[in-house]
Amino acid sequence: MWSAHPGERAAAVAAWWPGARICAAEVFAGCGEVASLAGPGDMLQVAEACARAYCGRFGRGPRLCSGTEVLRGADEGVARQAASEFLSAKLALDLGLDRGDSRVVRIADAHARLWAVEAMRGELLGPLELSVRIDGDGFTVRSRPLPPRLVTADASASMHDPARWDYDGLERAARELKARYPRESVVEVQFGAEIPMEVVVRSMDALAGRGCESRGDGAPECLFWQPVTVDLPASP
Image 1 (cartoon, rainbow, N blue to C red):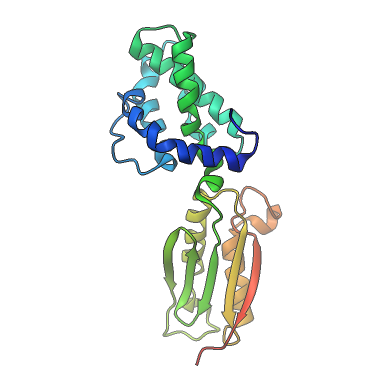
Image 2 (cartoon, one colour; image 1 turned 135 degrees about the vertical axis):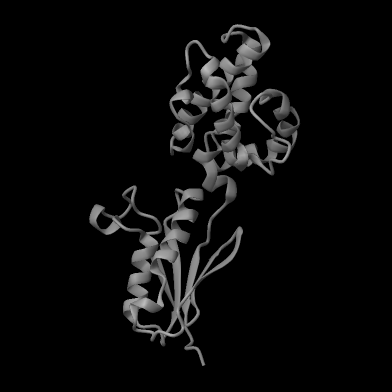
């Protein structure tokens, strides 16, 4: 029974993956190499490869042939429907069966949940727990599942000189994380008393993303627009 709770659905997909991966090579045959996939979060690349390999062969193209963006949307149900439609067409072509054949539909529906993981990515990967520490070295970006990343500062410039701080680099780092965690919006910003307040404010603006302020919090342009500030002891 497919749970109505998003977290339970995500856990079910993650638990199902070891067994599903065994037959994935057969289901996704013709789409490219799948042996190196580490988990269900990697399935988007298979979906894109399948679309490239098969869309030109369908007489009546499924919705996914117009673009895989639907798999990245927030609506998991729509993503699963689009994936199931495509897989039904692919399997029917591979097996010489009708798209409506019960065997085709059953297999397509089962594996469509793997292609809908982008719509559940935050639940599958868990809370991001994003934090950014500001100190004389620059911005240290930390998140729970990924190694720390340092966006270095120009130590030759003063703390008050905008040229010291790589705000563009900080925004790029935030944008990369947002692409993986589209539902996350909170970031903990850590800084000591030696960090000028204008640096803190501009850092939070960079984390929120360009265009966020003019469009309003939560707009598509926004990255991590809910900062939580933490005061640290001053550096020696």
